[in-house]
Length: 71
Image 1: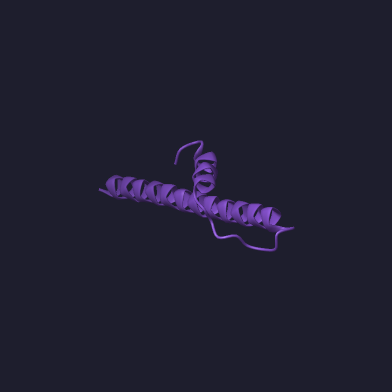
Image 2 (image 1 turned 90 degrees about the vertical axis):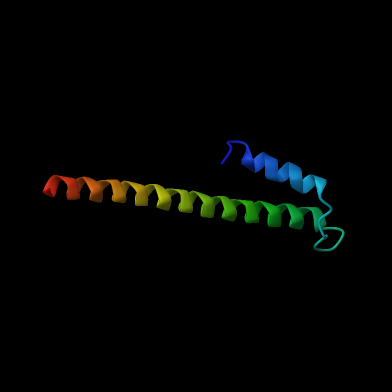
């Protein structure tokens, strides 16, 4: 994942014509909050999956070392 992924997503959303949510008075606030909440949730999932993959690789390497030492 690139370090500026958050900004890349925001920029791409600005280029898209998204369906509008909410009344005219609150539309901008509602849309900003929805997009922000989605992005935060998405990045948490990406971080969790990345951490999980890293731990699985470490476990596999550790198990391999244990097997080698037993031989």
